Structures are given as C-alpha cells and as structure tokens.
Image 1 (tube, rainbow, N blue to C red):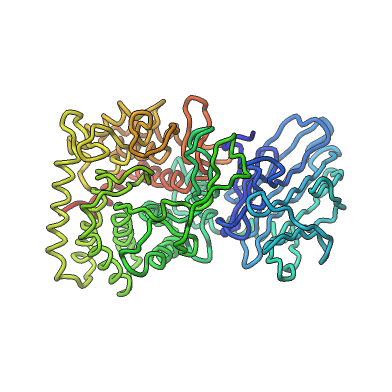
Image 2 (image 1 turned 90 degrees about the vertical axis):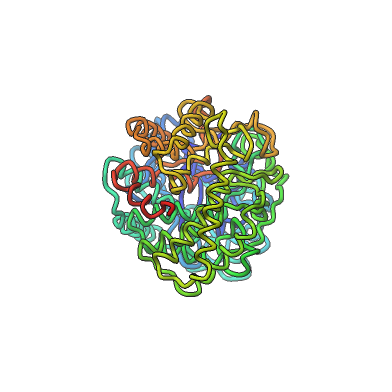
Length: 601
C-alpha cells in the first residue's frame, strides 16, 4: 500500500488527482472535486480504477519534483536499461477536464507497459469501451472518458493496456479527457501546447506572491496547493482532495473533506491577503456570501463548491478503505450540525476583508446584521463544536469564545466602517461583554489553571490556543500562558499537538484514536512566539515544515510513532496554517497589527 505522503497532487482548479511515487494515478474525480471517482485505487485496489506506467525491467530508483512553482509533476523511473520521465499535469480549463501524461525518454531504451483501469462511481461501474472519435472512449451512465495517444492499445481483463519502448529525447503523449456521455467529445488537446500553457499559468500566478524570507519556498508551495484546491468558477476552496483517508489506520474516523467549510474563511482570507492574492480573497469572500445567503437560521457550517447544501452522508461498501480503514464515506453529515463558532469566523472574515480594502456592499452588511441577530438567541445553546463531534452537544469553551468574536467584530464594523446599525450597537456591546465574562468564569478551571474544552470540565482542547490569535485575551494574560503550558504538558506528543485526548475524553462519541493535528501544532508555534518564546516557536515551525513530503505537501495529521501522515490529503487548513505562521514569525509587527484590529474594547 502506498503511504499517504507518497502521493503528489495535480489540479486544474476544478478537480484534482493523486499520483504515487511510482507514477500511478490512484485518485481522480471528474468533473469536480466532489464528483464520483473514476480512479479509486487509493481507497481500494487497482480493480477500483488506476492508471500506471510500469517499466518491464527492474526498477532501481524513482525521483520526482514539481517543475518550479507549478503543479506540473515530473517523475523519473530508473531501470538497468535506462531512465524515463513521466510529465503529469492537468491544464487549467474551461469546460472539459483533462489529465495529460507525457512519457519522455531520458537515457537508454526503456520498455514500458501502460495499464488503464477506468471504474466510474467510486471504483464500482465498469464502462463500455470502444474506439471512436479518433480515440478510445469509455462510457457508463452520465460519464465518458476519451483517451488520445499515438500508441496502440488493446483490452485485457476489463482494462486497457499497451506496451511500447521509449528512447532518449522521445516524448509520447497520453491525454485522458472527461465529457458528458450524451455529448460528443471535446476537441483533442495538443499535449505539448497544453504543457506550455499550464506552465505559464502557474508561473504567472506564483509570481504575484509578495512573501519573502527564509520560508518563501514552503509558503509558495502551500499557496500553489491552496490554489489547486480552489474551485475556480465560484472561488470556493475544498478542505482536501480526498474522502476517507483515516485519522487512525484501520479506524473509523474517516470523513469526506471535498467540501467548503465556513470556519476556513478567516484563516484562508488572511493567508491570501497577506500573500498578495486579493483577487482570490475577493472570490472566496463572494463564495462565502452566496453560500450563507438566505435565512440566518438555515446557515450551515459547510457547503458544496457551488454552495450546495445537501451533502448527505452514505457509505461505499465495495471499497475496502485505505489500508482497510472502514467505512469509506461520501458526503458529510456534519453539514447539518449546529456549530456556534462559525458565526465568529464569518463575522471575523467580513471584518478583516473590510480592513484590507475589500469593502462590503449594502446587501452584504444586511446579511451580517441578520446573522448576528440570529446569534443573539443562539449563543447560550450547546453545540457540536469545532471538531464536529458525533456525540451529544456540549457547551464548548471555544464555541463560546467564537460567539464573543462574532459580537466583537459586529461592534467594530459599526464603529469603524460606518455601517448603519446604531440601534443595535449598545445591545451587541452588552452581549459581547457578557459572553466574555461567562467564558472567563465557566471555561477556566482553577485547579487545572487552564481553560478547558467544555464548561466545568478538566479536559484540555487545542482549539483554546486560538484565544490570543482572535484577540479574546492578550498573550500577556497569565491565563493564556498557563493554558499554553497545560496544553504542552498534556496534549503534546513528540513536540506536536493532539486536538484532545481521545482515549480518555469520550466527548466525540467515536472509538479509537488519531494522530497529532498539524493545524493545532501551527497554532502552538504562533502562541509560543506571542508569549515571547520565539526560539521554541521557530524550532517547532521548522519541524512542521520538515514534515512535508518530498514535494512539499501536508495531510491533516501525523503519527509520531510510525512517522507517517494521516487524514485527508493534501489538507488546505494545514497549508493555510503554514502560510499564516510563516507570516507571523517573519514579521515582528504582524501580530501586533492584527491584535490592534481585534482587541476587545
């Protein structure tokens, strides 16, 4: 089984693929991120769909890299007979998605075998394959793929195979294009032209990055990854490319992350704006406004890439799961949960965007007023929290803190941005102060000398590292410092941070354990810097950057014991956190500026 960190990521900014270290495409959803996979070997085996090129001779070594600041992947396969290079990419597109693979001879004459197994609907549906329209078509239900290549192919065991030899300097193209089965295939893509255009697209995009400093390469790779996880037609950013990569090998903590979470809004906006990508920040903000439009009582915590609300969760029994980690899930039932913190994240993102010059129109402000008025009657309710527990709702300290953020930002928008809501201003101030007082009284455990996960609990939660980051309390506050110390004592493994102790804390209603959370580990680095422990912060950040795989990608979690990544991949939030932490550590005034914007009156 290929490890999660052994995959590289391709994207056309509407969907994406995972390619293994050996050049096999094991995951690809067409035509969107959340469409059914036509290659699903990642969650099963080759019979569930994959596309590989294998030398017939013994493989001695593999090497790979992205070409500069792009998502063009180059994989070299070295054999005793010679070396070939696979050049894999997905051209940013209009309507029809393609994955292009160019086989280039580097040294010697190498014999290769291609094996293309197409299985629509998450590795389940065997297509009808025929030669037509100048290529090889595979059709089943609404989906169709057409393969264009000069190499002769044949069918074998419900797959398409080919044998060929490549010599130095020779470049053989393979282009696989999706189209609706009731339509004719789109015009054939010229692989070399598409390669040049794709390289130009990514180079021009990366050149806009305004970030410098010692971590610039890591930041640009993270930003390119975030761009690759963006659904360009709407500006929505999916949490990850995949579904059901496990948080524990063999466990049940397997979720579908191919959707857009509201709580990503603040951190994503900050990462994009700080890096000079205002157009992407505007597009993300507009997606956010469209997604939450309507009745405030119907606001969800996540949506589809076009703002879809129905994300019904079901299991896919024919897939064995990554290393037998079952179930494999499609959809996400958490979309129907009440999560109080999203109000804070939405209002904070609106406030920060306004301060950065991305001004809200009058309808946008009316939406914000409606949301905060709805929150007035909800902030005292229990919820499912930032970690989307599958147990009973609780009074989570982080959730209440983020309710404070919502009222605080609403007050500041009125005070600083000349928005009309004077009749609400004093009431919002009073509620803000009341929430702050309650969190400090009920969320702080004096025996533990720390803020805890749930009111009245003694259990810790890494989400409380956000207290100084959102301005709830200043980094100099003794309660912040003692909470950071407690989290380091009780939630840190090998220097990295757990969300909470699943083996003793049954609040999430799920069996098993999980790895350390990379997002929370970046938060710890932020907090260490803010409380004056900059050397410790930089050491932790350098260790986190070093966890990236050989092409600069991060998953959601990491297992310090087995030294491998866990969870869905690549994970947007991990890369957003990397960008934000690099900015804070690289700019002495960065947090001071942000804190001035956030500080409570």
